[in-house]
Image 1 (cartoon, protein in one colour):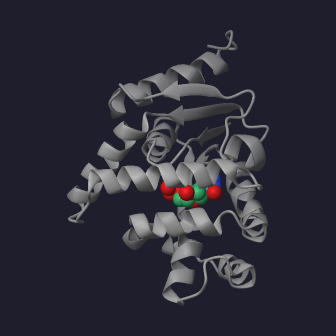
Image 2: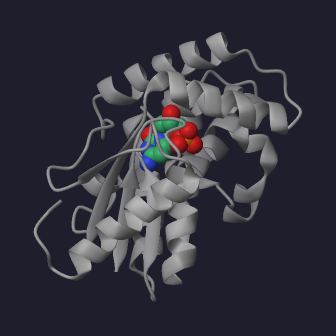
Length: 212
Ligand code: DC
């Protein structure tokens, strides 16, 4: 079974993906990390983030061993990832890696922006996670502070809104729910509530019940 989870920045889809994978004993891929790794390579090289040739070669040289690097989690890298991920050549290079990951047994949960629409259009379950931007900014600020970073909630909100705009309006694989995705609004849910709601959706689909 393949579970696709998409949604905007800081919607909580990453945590949800990890928890769902654990619950079902599936593998999990946070696809944002891949774009973040390309962005970090570009930043480290002092490259222009819009340089398609350099970005494509950074994508070709990615080493999944580095996906756990905590330096990929910063706001600056996330913002840069939103820029490099709009480059069609970068997306093309990263597509087959994601598809291969999705298809290996016993099952997989992938979270990102275009999993249900482009990477795994035939996913068994598609969930599109949304949350109020103000709530997302608050959560992201708390996370950053917990990591010991300085974070200003208003600046985080501005960054989230800027990234939403860029991710939704790019020409290639924009952020949008697949026609057959279930919407999960977790603005008023804590992590456990969001996980339960997602499991309910998966179970409803498994049981072949009516769409919720
Ligand atoms: O989910 P995240 O914040 O780690 O993602 C960082 C950026 O990567 C995001 O702003 C857009 C891009 N991204 C993408 O284009 N497609 C994906 N499947 C995942 C992330």
